[in-house]
Image 1 (cartoon, rainbow, N blue to C red):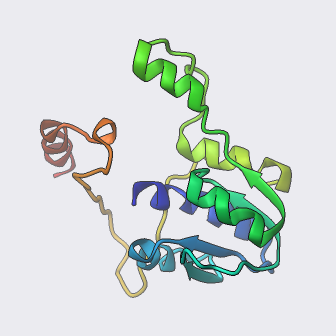
Image 2: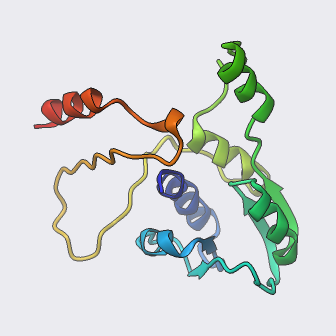
Amino acid sequence: MGDVILSEPLCHALREVYPDAQIDFLVKKEFAEIVSLFGSITNVIIYDENMKGGEYDVVLDIHNVLRSKRIRSKFGKKVLVIDKRTLKRWLFVKFKLNLLKDTPDIIGRYFETAIELGVFDDDNAPRIELAGIVKQKRAALCPGAKHWNKRWLPERFAEVARELV
């Protein structure tokens, strides 16, 4: 879910650069409602293993996993793929060899994928607009992650919550 939310600034920037483009987002069913909150998306397409494909001028694969590799070529004339720096991440996790010091964060890596399209990072955080909700300061704490190494310690959530209050 976090990676889906963190893709919103890229979607927003794509819409700003290409205001009349059809910008669709392919996502698993459980994340479709989140993507539907992105004001920049034309259509939310639910992932299905038996998808036939489509005819897009460009496909951005910002996930670059086996599932996305299998389907991305079915959809686009041109495919742009995120550089996840897999080897450097592996070296860091296994041997604490940090070759990632000058690597952008995940939002920055999403934007790297779209550089060829003239889309650049404006350093804005995710900005999902919730229809009908009065604008006010908000924060969301999401105390979970699929992978253990992406999980934050409970005391850190408590500390941030205290600071926000």
